[in-house]
Image 1 (spheres, rainbow, N blue to C red):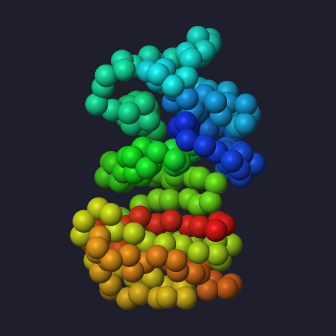
Image 2 (cartoon, helix red, strand yellow):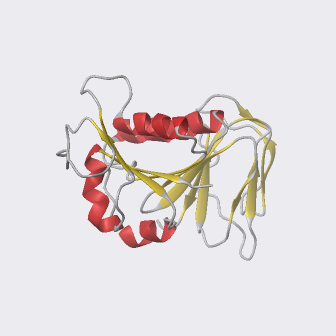
Length: 208
């Protein structure tokens, strides 16, 4: 099934890594000033969405949805919802983590929204990749020097971490204490994370 890639306007410094993560048949939605990444990604949009308050509308011969300036959804959230309407179930979000902490946290929340819909979603940035651990276990190969687990959504119990420097068995992560920060997969092993109740945010760190 074709994956939908959402391109936001946050900074991307390592275009080579991001380009390597793209597939030939990806459907790319550029959100407003995410269009500044067009040259760096070397990929044309399949769809452009935005209110164009931070980037000029290119008026290209590409399907474009122009949004009002005053709205409840950010351009990125609208793009995700539009992609869901069009039947996409697998998402990669790039250019969505950066200097604006408010937008960063809002975009991380999109992972939970998509997980609740039964969709697969990953955020990729210059240093890491993020996804929700909920219904199914997730794995961390030892090519990632570090990984962290954060409970930012409420109840998270029955958490088990195997083949990691700091293993856990049927643990609980709270929003008040970041117990799951900076773990490491064992050399030559693939660490695993499973959650019995609730959701946690998994961050695989490629470089510090």
